[in-house]
Image 1 (cartoon, rainbow, N blue to C red):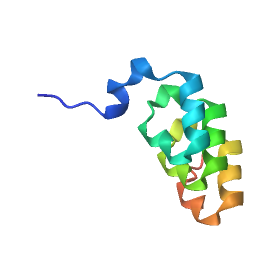
Image 2: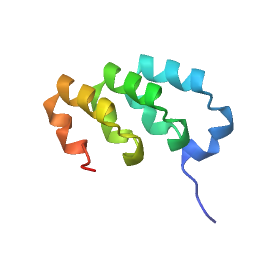
Image 3: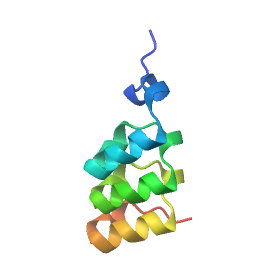
Image 4: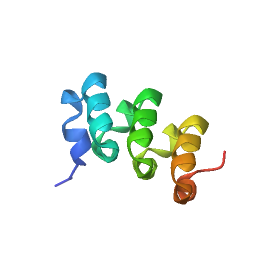
Length: 84
């Protein structure tokens, strides 16, 4: 039996509006979102609410702007920045 991550199971219920509201309340909520739902706006809102959310953003969605905001709020987040 193949197990799927919770984020994939609930993908049909994840809307951009719902995801944005979730990360505005708790930035780390992004870890339960499917990577396809991690838009630049949602990622930015997540790190603005909690810089540690950067750890849960898919590497391909860690834009320079998102990384800069996270690191400016907490230098410890530099460990999650991926060089491109």
